[in-house]
Image (cartoon, rainbow, N blue to C red):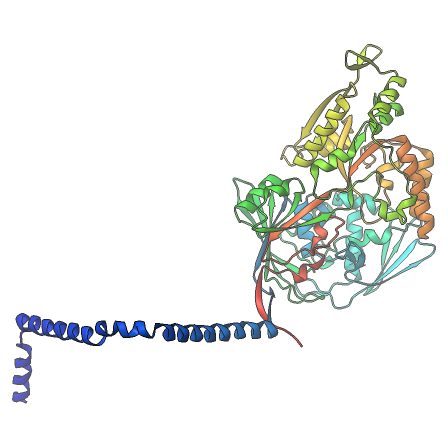
Length: 599
């Protein structure tokens, strides 16, 4: 043991001899240099003699490696392909605000979007705007088109696991009808009675035959077991409006103030794995409400969102095509120049007629671009069958416009139209939008050339203190209003042009009144035979063009914008409203993956 300890101590006392190490390093260096000269440098000339053979062999080896790589890729292409991959989160921007998540009170595009994702309805629209059943299995019409009996699916449940039944449908309709609820949807349901026939059957009874009633069955259904005990007057302020429970493809998760400075609010949703039509491919969906389309464009440029709705065709040019894909979505609505027909000078049909022929609507559409569609009538022409039988708006003719104004007593004096010592002055009112403002400016320029003093008034309807609806629309506080009217999937435009809809509570903003036109509208909506309906609508369209309560400018197109790796709205999709873009939301994805091909 002592010998071992002594040996270890001796080993510890060993010291490195630096001189000896240096001599050995030099010796190794000398030997290495000698071998390099002998076996490499002196034989370089020999390599030059065989360089052709070496090059050929290197090329052969390279070709073999490349061939193997190409074979591998080609083989994978035969049994694998890139495809949208399930999972992930999708962040979408829409125009807000979001004040309530209860669909009875939705008033903005963002609120409508959340409603479509979280709630179910009896009927909805598919990717080409055709009506299809959502939770409705069948529909039976009886008693001359006055009774509609709907059978619903038995596999639908609320997000809290409670089964959805006919009782929920009846509860929702009665809640909409109740004046204490204070829902803007009430006007559509006042005269409709509804009852539960059985657990899965509900029956609607109308006061008169109404052919377009199935299109009214697209309302969001609310849960009776959560709201049934709440006083209708308190529903709006109930916590449900901030944390809803629905039965749609996505479940509400969180309502968040994302950016208080830019006033961006977001609704976070997760996939409903128990959805009756199958679970969505996305795991999560976040919808951000932005102030206007300018704010949405900024979010797209900053890469803050995966996609965006509510971007006008004109504004979409500001978005990079290298990063985003753009899908045009023609809306079932129309942009019109609407005259206040009960105030001077528009109570004179000749003045309206002069402006009709003095407006070059094609110039407006060309300015917008992006395939913006013409719209001359109070509805979309294709909705009434054969478009060749439809009446046509008169062609643009400024000479004729001047003649009609002269005939109406508006004489041209020093480039100004004057009658009874008073100048012809007109104000065009519209809402803040690049598209609307540009269109209003083009019309202003055209009318000015007729000797009319035309001014333009722009209202920011999205401002918190805006009273556009109450003052401008309900109060009819305008001379000419450039505004968009939602037409819908059916040509029934009774609400906009029938004289019974005049007044603050109605939607006949122009105060148009014509007894023959009233009769045509009332008869058309009561007819269930397509040809008879279409004939009545064509008759109404001719009267409308002759009376000129408004001038049709165009059918608007919005662009849906999403990252190129996303799979969202279909290329040939058509929508009734912007929120109908979700017709195929179950198949939306945010990225691609490699999958095996099926035989």
